Image (cartoon, rainbow, N blue to C red; front, side, top):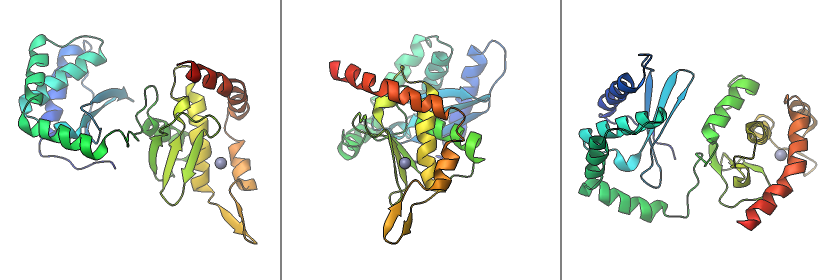
Length: 247
Ligand SMILES: [Zn+2]
């Protein structure tokens, strides 16, 4: 699912981000920049700074965009990070580059292949599951869990908040939690629970399958906000459902 191949352009692209940071960051600190080409189903790019590093994800649709378009995009994204708007020339250049036939044909192909059926990406409206996974893995698993495929569910489910599928090696978290009303520790808690399923695989005794073994439960209660999380879910999930129904 995830494309980690470095295109030969990545080096140049990284330098554009450094230039843009030099312009917008008044402290003069240029963070190390990681560039990732990401299979978004549309032309969507993101930037965030974490732990002093900048993480840029460029839609794979734009992987072959002309370098001047990449440069313009760098200024647009970095400006956004500083809540500014990049100079108009950058917007114009970027928009012009998007019209290139190579980009347009990729847009068409991406729509056909990915369409609306697979918006199954970790990057939600509020929370990025890649990021949540990473945090939880470091905090509670000494970074020992291998990253499965992560995605938000297609539908907002309220009874099932998370699901681990061992055969497909994936964790799906209910989209109902991807709201500003949901505290981050709740998403972390659900992720934590699903990750415990990786740590404690299902066991079969006399033909009966046990998912939540006592070792699982023991670890689960060690989540520092276990009770608060359980309580929040108990008190709020129905409320989220009512809010969703109104929409
Ligand atoms: Zn479970």
